[in-house]
Length: 192
Image (tube, rainbow, N blue to C red; front, side):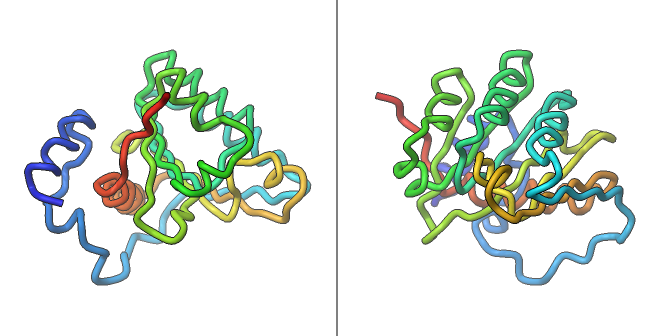
């Protein structure tokens, strides 16, 4: 990817891509050493209402929700992202190219049809991240991550975990930088 392409993508993001071109395209050379202070809570399935907690986190967003998803079939989470977009929250989704093509349910294309910007990451065998970064740069910034795909099966059939991490700006910036790296090689979802 050329510097001009990165500038074009940065412009499309409204300035979100605030890292240097070379750093955005290269993997992190060393592990992140983040401060150990954070507000952390977890949810486990089966048992906990992880989907409900994710939906609540999306509803509390005030500025932005960046999403990376491998598989996405959960109606309620998709609806919460669409609703956030409709109330003016900057929602952006990067989904796995191959998995999105295999899904029988159309939450990803449904979000795109509702106006949520969606990109497809086909650069890897699997774009297997399951991440939301909510309100990066704000005091209320929150990372949602874990083994939990945004699917009905993750809530009702699988043994999964979701970790909610707040109060750690260094970690939030690291997750945003990772989102940006994947965005740099992703392609917009084209609806037909």
